[in-house]
Image (tube, protein in one colour):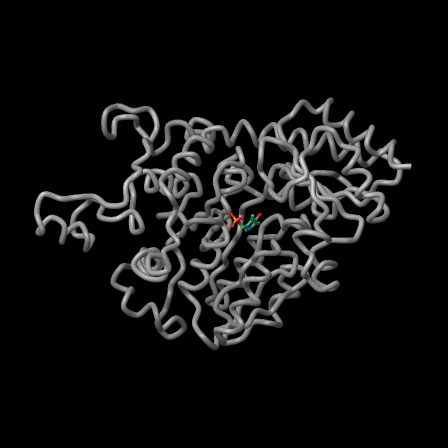
Length: 409
Ligand SMILES: *Cc1c(COP(=O)(O)O)cnc(C)c1O
């Protein structure tokens, strides 16, 4: 099946209970069973079924199966938010004394999380660009994971995933990819060497900006040797399911990071139009960024533009498409604010991946408590505006931005 067909028909045959055409909402906390013997079996994964929604729920499970298939993984675990997914994936493999290598242009929340992990004895070494040249010198016996976004948000840098995966695997280190901004429409990171893929499904997967959620997909390919990952010793009996079994039976379930059935339901609906939305979003983004290239006093960054330093990588991995985020520089903070105030269509909001175009001034919001160095590394200047492009008609968007720019002075 091709992408859009799989989105509609993959892993849901419409026959699971009463012939319903999409997975219904199981809005319950617990599931009863006919006997204590049966409950014991279900509880201990010896029989199929559900016991308690923090541990498993059919609506959530339908969402997990769809994403696991779509991302070519062996399974997936849904979480209450993208940040919960990032946190749970990392804590599943890290312990005190371990080191992480990560890109400094990551999503602000993830950068902050690495700061939080310091109190638990986990150190993160940041590289400005996730390339072999910058990563290799930082690898040590303590390095337990390389973590990066494929298209950095908001730096919009593209990582050469195959090269970095090869380096990671040569050193027996897994590569974790936050693929939120790339989406399964542009790439399946597992096919290019990623070991674990994470999404903030609050964004493009949901698509309508109506539910917070995250998801972790495992390739099942990484060997969690007990010399390097002693916590995995008791899970080696699960073979390629070691990572997922440890996650489900351990930190994810004990922290209580589960996804609510209602939010899984909204995602199950949203995901069906991912292909249609991304096609339109990438088209709109290219057209809008081409307009910005010709606009007086505006500097534009969009990986789909031929002028972008990442255009070659966008051709290699995304068939030349550039995703749906653009950043522009307006010349000064004052000009950036005037531009935003002059806009009629985009909403001022801190989100991406909505059907609506959203704009934000990252330096004064998402990066307000970052250091100047962190801001520069993330491509956040005082005059930067981040645009999460929506599905509106492109002529309306271009006209609105044209008017807003012309009215600045
Ligand atoms: C939004 C986002 C997150 C965090 O996801 P939430 O669902 O907001 O918790 C993580 N990574 C990236 C790239 C994001 O854009």
